[in-house]
Image (cartoon, rainbow, N blue to C red; front, side, top):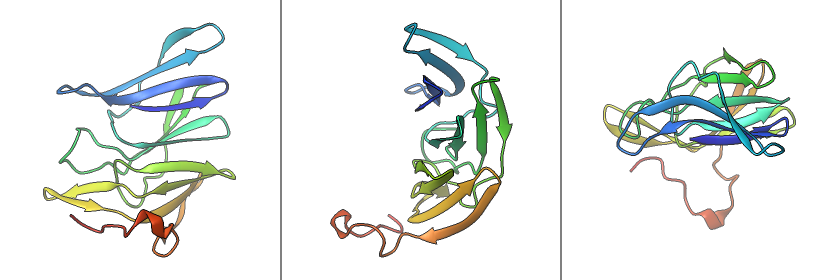
Amino acid sequence: MTVSSANGKIYAIGGNVINGPVLSTVEEYDPVTDRWKKKNDMPNIRANGGISVVNGKIYIIGGATWNFGVPALPIVEEYDPIVDKWTRKTDIPTARLLCSSSAVGGKIYTIGGEDFVNGNSIIYSTVEEYTPEGWPFAVSSEGKLSSKWGAIKTAY
């Protein structure tokens, strides 16, 4: 599952049940009332995607329809918690799961991740930048990450 906060509430989105299905559920937790509330499901089932918030809207990026071994999804969906509505956005150029994403200055940066192509794992070291208008560019992380992290693997 992916978890993030927006507008003073916490959202638990998608995920998978151990040895069970991948989910599309969305639940909202209000810390003021200490209550959970069911919200509209994501249009696509998904686990292991990235999540970020820009301007009070939640973005789910990539992920997969099963735990491991299936191709990653390029899908980006925007959730507006105020109106409880999902909108499909421009797909990410590099489909990936198990990626990280973070918002800075109204832009989302999706970093790393993995995909499975013909049963083979591919590890990504790319960084892609997203704005609410779409994906303007991708950059390589080569030489930009701390050397203490070690070398980035490009394949298993």
